[in-house]
Image (cartoon, rainbow, N blue to C red; front, side):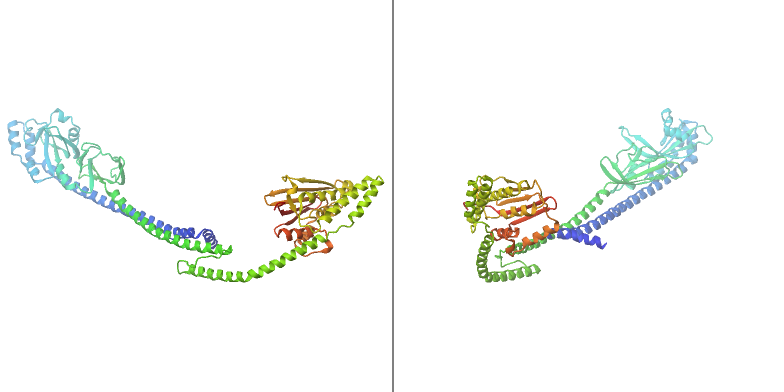
Length: 598
């Protein structure tokens, strides 16, 4: 856990301050608010859904209670009517006149209709033509007897409920929930069916709700009630498992692209096998819930946005001041001491800026004191460098006088020994170059290379096939235009022959390559294929070259050359050595380019 924490803080600390503050804001504010907000919104959505579901179930129970009460009362009325003696007398009359008189005097059904608002109509269908066509009695002709409900009624003793269509004189259809039951005519072969219709207006008054859309259907048949007075005579457009005697559903339903909360319940009617399926739909529950959730979401956004604006303003203000302090410190590190006197704020950053001003002021005072001392020191150093250069140049002295060699060369020519004469000529030419350039500050690159080639020719005469050489100049069109210190290359070549090719019996090779790899840098590489140096010997030589002491006993040594270059051109230039034991050594001089006209 501690390692993870350290890695986290290490990752944060690598960012800029503005990014660190944003990361802290995200970790400390955004993520907790997002987590808590998501939890609260989820919990709120669940509570609101449960709340609307409870209301929906409660309203469905209300409808169930009302329907059960109405249908139970209608059933009890049908019981009283079906077994009334006067009705039996009407239905069993064999004479039309007697049946008509009995029917007119039978007022029970009128009394029920007038005293019970839930009853829209009471009708008795009978095949007794004598009793038919009087008041509430209707003759059951072939058309009526062919109806499914009629055949079902006369074929069973039980009572059942069906949605029943009725048309007025204008052809308009009306649907009602109707109780249907057979009336047994005692002592007669006549058949009668009682139909009691429940008033749709009464159901609208008792059941309808401003909050919910209620749809009722009996068994798997048509809709006989809809609070919107639509879809009568149609099958409910929601899924209902009619095989489940106690089918219940509570949850969302879809109507086209709209989502509603609905509950479907099954009501078993009083002392019958009929069932009513009650569908209660809340069209506003999800909308109301979503409004509350959107409001909560907006509150969370405001809770995130308000701190974000403050963080943005603060980080801009804070990082701006940090950048000012950093820029001024960077200027001071680059020896630019002109910094402003005012820094905004009065906190720790302001104190740090004040300390920077004090430090800069002290540096200015010290620089002023040291300026004159540096001028004097530089003058002395320049004089010392001139003396050291003269001393280093003076350490290389010729071993023979040029005039004496010239006399010997003439005698060799007189004697016909041209090889000796040529050797003396080369040696004289070499000595002339040394004499002419002792004390000279600069020579052309061509003269220096000519002198080195003269020296190599002398060594070739001396050692034969043990010493071979190649001089290659790349990318330099005119060697006369470039200047360098005299007598830089010959000691290196001599070192390569004396030490590098000492153990080489034949095919020794000295390669000199001159090029300009950069616009202001001249590079001269001198390599041999001799014995090379071990790692310890190479490291010792490099340490010796890095020292600034003069060693007169090593008058033509590599250290001498390296010190001359550094004294004249500067400490960033000099000589590098690479060597591999058994393969050879390469010494590279790197000096700034100087032109003749400079």
